Every structure is written in structure tokens, then in C-alpha cells.
Amino acid sequence: MATFIMAMTINPSAKKMHADLSNQVNNSLEVFALNNIRLTSLFATLGRYDYLAIFEALDQTVAFRVASMINSKGILETETWPVIPYDEFSRLIL
Image (cartoon, rainbow, N blue to C red; front, side, top):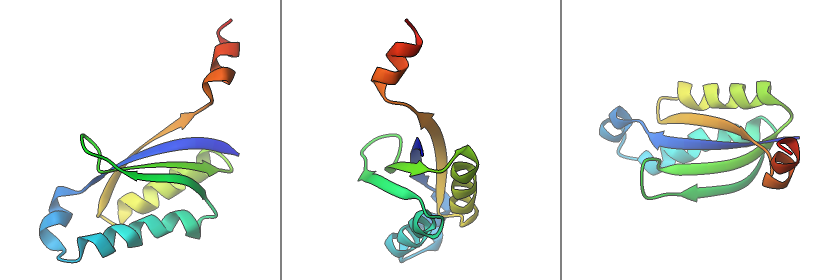
């Protein structure tokens, strides 16, 4: 399994269109479960992004599909990064 970080912001137009924004965000996040994604952590943040998800997916293709599905709902905009543990990275650069 590959690990990814997904940073998400609430689409500004969604803030104006949905009185039940919290429910809409939760519905968008259900995409993880529907695609057999192991969501290891989900955080709300103060700053540039509203939410940060750390998840494991079979491969990059699955991560792309999930990001596309979340974006298509129009509630959240995503930015996704593949990551590896620092120890693995440090062995690569020696």
C-alpha cells in the first residue's frame, strides 16, 4: 500500500450554497470508504487548508480516482501528495 496526504479546502461557492455544509463535507469524505481506502488520520486545520487526510491506497491510480471523485462533488477542492517515511527517504539520498 502507498501512503498519501490529501489537503482539502472548502469550495468558496459551496459555503454560499449549502446551509448543511458539515453534512456535505461528510458526504464528500465517504468517498474514502467507498473505494476501500484506509484513512489513517483526518484533521481539521487552521490555515491554508480546512482538512488534512492521511490515507493508504493500493496505488497512485486509486488516489487519483478518490481525489477526482471528491472534487467532482463540488464541496471540497483537493491537493494530494504521495509520501514515504523519512527513514526510507534518507536511505535513498545516501
